[in-house]
Length: 305
Image 1: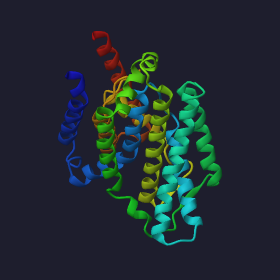
Image 2: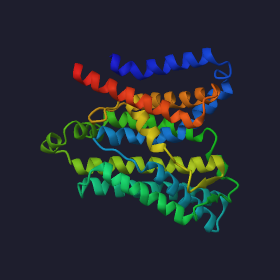
Image 3: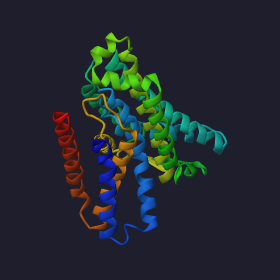
């Protein structure tokens, strides 16, 4: 019980401390800004929950985020059609690009049996280089008057809907149970008749799709996408949120709601550090420390169990 409530207790304590320490923090506008800002990495973190629960890792999501946005905006700008059709094409292109990138990772991991760390480290470089090449290492601006409609609160509600769907998938479907079984012990899962390669493939496909959708909504917020800066460190935020939320780094255990708590913890920390006047260059130290502490707690709980 303590382990399951840990992320939520930490979130509540952190929220209370920030409210007491800063009057502006509890301003409704600031709280709404935090909710919107964490949505983009939060959507990716939900997909990362499945990948890590199945015993994998994905370091390429930040680069795939940039590539999906660049491909989608260039297609929307290059096709002569109505603004609504262009918007729909952009969303489909971003989702498809993300899914294809995830499927590539999934194929290399599940079919070719290459360790996921190595695969996604390699595709991280490939995806980023492709986005830089396609955009001439610059900014791709949207030329669609409807495109900004993808910003605002849309990412937040997409994150909320994705959380509900994935939580139900993990608990109520054979696929969800197979994800945790593969992460817990892949050999035993295979002997039990579970198609472990298929399960792994689908987890990477799902995170790729979510990454693409997150990218197009992020581009909608800014009305553009940067091939150099978009998605930087998103893989770190996603992995950190998953670990803080209680999903085991060794696989076999997943908590979608814990991941949501983790992403809000990271968002509140970043916001509080800004309000306290701490340099953005030092904020990575705090995030890294939080990740290490979360992993230490996992190992401690595992030994006690």
